[in-house]
Image (cartoon, rainbow, N blue to C red; front, side, top):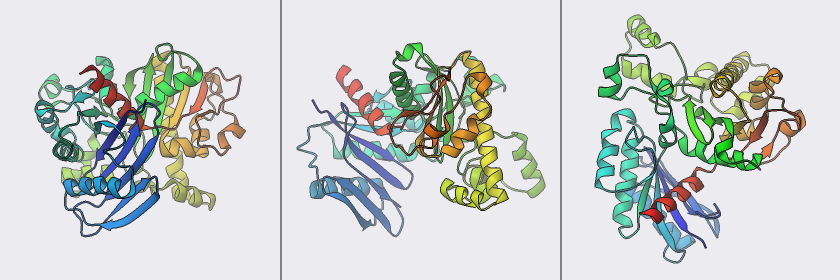
Length: 398
């Protein structure tokens, strides 16, 4: 039986939504409202009649969500006829409060508000989305699914920074990790592909999109992850630096007189591939590399080298690894990144099959050789389906 969940992902200036069957993962419709609060935005809705895209000036998330509801009525499917059972919300930061998805109530909203200082770009928008949906769907249960929740299983040695203890106890300075919904979904799918229970599988999962993170998963449980207190730590990303010497902030402040806010902004939005090569689109970087562009080549090399370092580190942390798993836009579609990140790891039991790796496919697949002791998998992520499934689980037990 279908159990449709309206999945909402409210960003700072966007609203992404999808009507997902929690049983099958099929999306009956989905859409995106962009440039909320700007002079001219756009609303794209994909449903039974195909894709429609219109100019939309939405001054708030409420206007954006009302436009989405209207689109269901105009282009289908009608929300009052599909048997929608709940609304599920992606929430970026749950701090240490939330290790599981939770029904949205006043206490949850207060807790998420208290965490704004840890996710100033995301939690305010997530709060807006929840408050708006509570007004527009007052009779439906609504559930918050947290990006950080999957990583609440990190042991103290993995989540603790070597800083004065009161920084952690009084100011929340510790590793939280992100992309948890994606890592949870992909880990379960990888175990299924290996034909083994998740509790019996050790994985290194690489979520490589514009944001990137690596997670060590032991028996279905996250035991280490590359993103830290914020999504800035870890792998090189589209516009984020990833790991760097923390004294760089002080150096730039002294040398250039820059404010901490400016340095923070540049490390989040002007670094990574964009800082190295001036471009964070991998398709453009590939074109430039093929043309002999040295900046593009260096950016590619730094990106893949950082991935390889984390694979080695998490291999050591896990002791044994059953599979390396690639997911998200770059991980699923860029064969060159996969090959370079795993080059010369045969001694670790990781051997990629060049033909399988370069074969054109959008399906979940194995790209390692048949005799590779460690499987290498490409598993398309589906965060909306994971949110829908977790939403239904919470509603069923509440």
